[in-house]
Image (cartoon, rainbow, N blue to C red; front, side):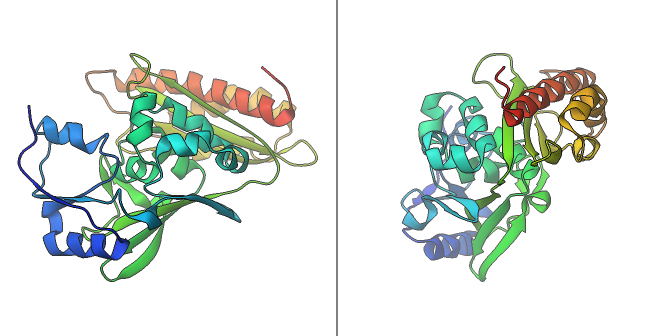
Length: 293
């Protein structure tokens, strides 16, 4: 199939992009890398009269660190995947991106596009949620910031207004010894996850768990923060945390409304999530402790 006809706009500034979105309202859609939107248009799963292509907007590109790690919304996933600054500052981001599709997808797909698309089976929305990322947004009336916890409202639905565009994502940089791991189950390599976990652990000088971040994807209508799991492990010694992992993983599986679809039942997703949380956190704790698996 082919996409329904649309008008293509190529603004060269965020202000121009926001003005176009304000002018055309819900008949317009931002086009970033196009790796998610274009297939949906081609299969007639959605249609828009106007596509606002932001790939030529220079202020949407780039990676910087100034307290936080900031990634411009139009930065290609492959650029962030291979950037040593990202790997050093926020390892979980670097660990998650290789799980996104195939390298051809990551060459065109953007960091902000993945987050703004809000597919609950995508890795980066779960990472943003787990790490308390802040999303920078610009619209016709100005700019604002949205906490990741307030951003994801449903499948492909976010807190962005019709005239707003995601301009950048800020991830907090942890300063202690940390480990990160991503584990997921999919029918084939590169497919969307049936269930997945993104986990990070930070240890303090006394080898106690200072922070834990656990994001689940592919299991519910939005990415899920496994808050009960994080609370169960925070403050524990490495030995205590390791011993508590089985129960903490069960708490994660109880913390969301699992979806049933043609790929898996909700009950299956819960069982798989329990296993994935335990294995991901085991790997993250070992890495933070300096243990090589």
